[in-house]
Structures are given as C-alpha cells and as structure tokens.
Image (cartoon, rainbow, N blue to C red; front, side, top):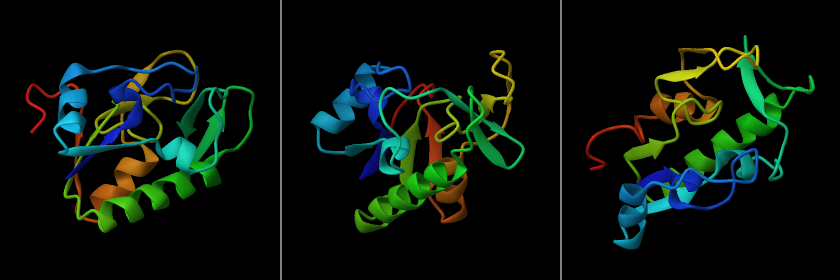
Length: 140
C-alpha cells in the first residue's frame, strides 16, 4: 500500500480549495494500491486556508500566523496511518510545506523554491518510509 497526497487524486484539499489531479495517482487508488491523505487536514487545518511556507523551523501563514503545531500533528497522524497500513512508500505533492520531497518554497511568499522537505515528508523518511514526488516518471 502506498500513501498519496489527497490533492493528487482530485480531492479539493489544497490551501485554495482546489486540487492537483494526477491521472497516474488516481489509477493507483482505483486499483487499491494507494490511499489518499492530506496531512494539513489531518492536522486540523481548514480548506480553504491561508497559504503557509516553512521559515526556519516554523510553518508560517502569509498573514503571519504560526501553524507549525498543526503541520506537526498532521505529520504524526499521517505516520500513524502509514504504519497501520504497513506503507513503505509515499507519493506526495512537490513544493508543499507538508509533502515536498525535494523542493519547498523559501518562506518569503515570493514563489521562490529552495531544496528542502516538507514536515510530513521529513517524519516519514525518519521512520523508514520512502517519499517520492508526483513528478517521478513511473509511480510504482
């Protein structure tokens, strides 16, 4: 079983209430090989919500609110689900402050990407789960 970012399956859970539909990811879910998860919703954040970026060791919204605790809670809940399902792999939305696996925004809300990992990705990797970007050529 693979966990995947829910937004990639067409679920409207992005910060702006939209999704990042990816046909390859949908096929994984339809075939019973993957389960969609939104760490930010699991952490108690609403949809839609104010955009957030990682700045130092914190996750801050564009309006200046610290939502680090919600992002950490979402990461912990995602890890619990992964362990329950014996998931060894995740395919997550790149650039996300939760799910980014190679790049995240730099915390200035200027659309500038830097090398880095989202809060959930870091926790999953620390627990032996391999995290891929949705931008990989082959999903499995």
